[in-house]
Image (cartoon, rainbow, N blue to C red; front, side, top):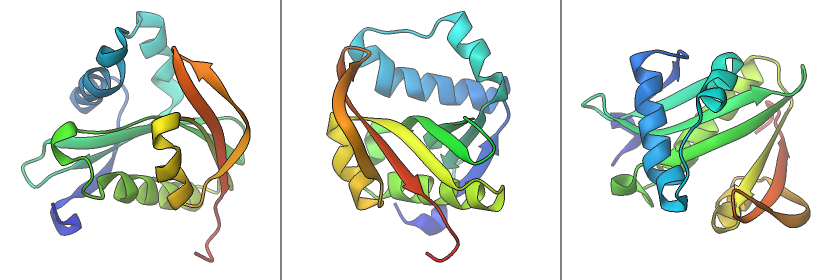
Length: 152
């Protein structure tokens, strides 16, 4: 899939597009672990920033969520790429576009908890591993962070 056929956009909380994002996140991230979303977890996302990457047919192919920690830092969460397009560079497009949005909004830092299988991806995007790995939702994770700036 070529990036020229993709559209990056912000997704409004509780919209039909948000519901599409929840379904994609559930299918790729939660169901394989035997986890579901609780109503409380969904409600807690009301003040987060949600983004999607859509194909030329307006199908959601990737999404992520940012939660503001403070006026300078965002936590990136729930990064997902649909199985039928994994390995085609959509994750890099999604994260790069989201970082650009964050920079325009005045944020300076992004942190995240990467699943151990995703650490090489984030390292390739200039994120830095911090501290020891830990277990979250039953699997190994690594805290990672990146200082974003306009010089890149």
